[in-house]
Image 1: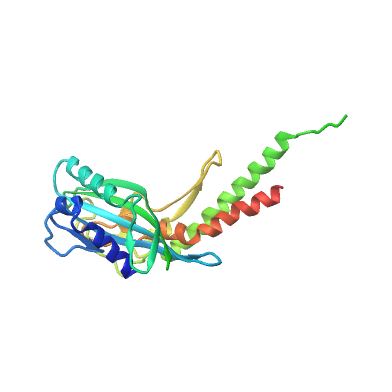
Image 2: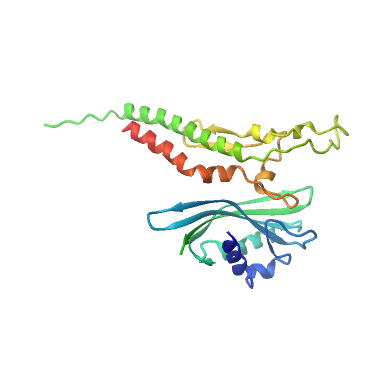
Length: 130
Length: 132
């Protein structure tokens, strides 16, 4: 799903979220010593679906935002920006028509060992092959 | 004069019994898939830092511990089924599912439901047909 990942990155570039995330957005794992806050995204699951005439891809995608700020307010603002950027958006994916990209759930947790906040969000994406 | 008798209690009883069977079947399907997807470690890692076992191998991290804790629970009122993983000892279940800053996620619960969604729906459809 290289095309999907490219579409995610393209939408991120130049957005309000990109300005707010000083550490950037990374696929699967951030490089060591990435400055906070930053985000990673990865594919949770993907399965093909089809009708008589269309081939589709049903994908679950997770975004995780990491922030070392003691207060959770900062990461909540970042989440709001992420949601505004991707929830119910018209994602441009080469070779596919994005039928929908919808947020399924969100989850805020704190890693006391690393002293960071982690905000997980899952999106469901349905792509129709052109 | 036409008369129709509607034995609501009998119908509800039949639906109710079938509902629990379908929920158990659905839970079982997702649990089986989650267990198949769940990663299993290959060695015992780390030593206990404090407490009675300080310095000793952390035996709770036995390979396969997480897999063994994957289970399902049908709600008492039959409103749903929940597939869950982890316990007090296997506290890291959610870290594996959602990932952490240090460790990439290796999801096993969400893909299980995603993959077997059609089969889960079929459980309830089959039950509805039997009730009719």
